[in-house]
Length: 256
Image (cartoon, rainbow, N blue to C red):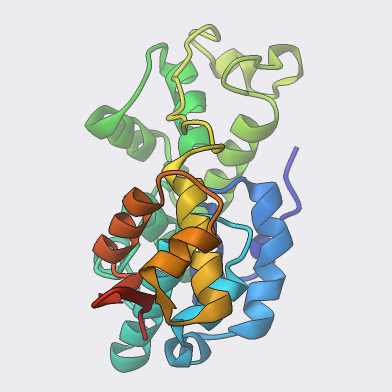
């Protein structure tokens, strides 16, 4: 049942941080394809801290939500300047690191005994207690059932259970090794879903970024002609707001 994932073979905090940021909004199968390639280019925070935006985005290619790459670079610069935060609470000070990512890095890299509550853990625990869990309720249940002293193994085991057997819509209850712990197998904690990709702002953002990576400083009119996607203006506004792209008069370029 345990999944053989490359980031499971290390306790290096940078490697774990990279994997967890990648996993925030991308399926594990796609992350596995990009993970080693990214670390070959940026094996440590120092190399990422020195990178320009185009280098980071090229290495991030295929993962989507490209602002994660630039936030990871900012995190690397902070780590290089001030050292590693080592607890779930202090790791949240890094750009792009929310409660789950902070807990995962603290647990898997630094051995802190905290639950790392991802979507898989959420629907497993919801079935164990017999009601959909979220927010503070979910955090409290996860803390109460955590196997103290073995938090890393516990978190990974329950994540794997949720990914392979205790699936959201079609749980394989007959194959579950802890089926007797389950109060209500029919409880469905609906995952947060994304809208369709075709025609979305996400698609337009990706097209704009590919154009800027290829051509650098681009006049706004040429950019719109070069990108065969609708909603380019909305995508461009979002990229500027997120600090990925800057506008100078009628030209746009990636941040330094």
